[in-house]
Length: 108
Image (cartoon, rainbow, N blue to C red; front, side, top):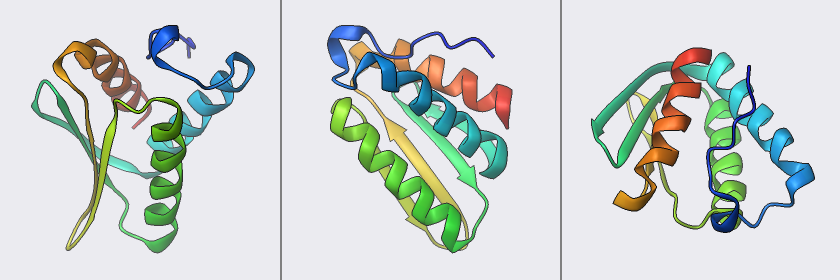
């Protein structure tokens, strides 16, 4: 899969050499744990995940690290009868969310 960047370089503080590794981590999560991908609105991506403690921990850890370098993301992990990871962005970053959603859909 192409490693097109999701985030404009000026919006991300992750060192360039680490970016492909982060993309690979998201791709692994998408292919191993994502059950559904929905867009309730343009600024919000909702990922339905496999409901188990490992997926919850892995998702929370990855979201925390991603938010450290791309602070415009807002991640919300919800554990109820389903496990969901919501990814929200301000309207100016919808193209970034579109790219993330496309990767999730392609891998899920």
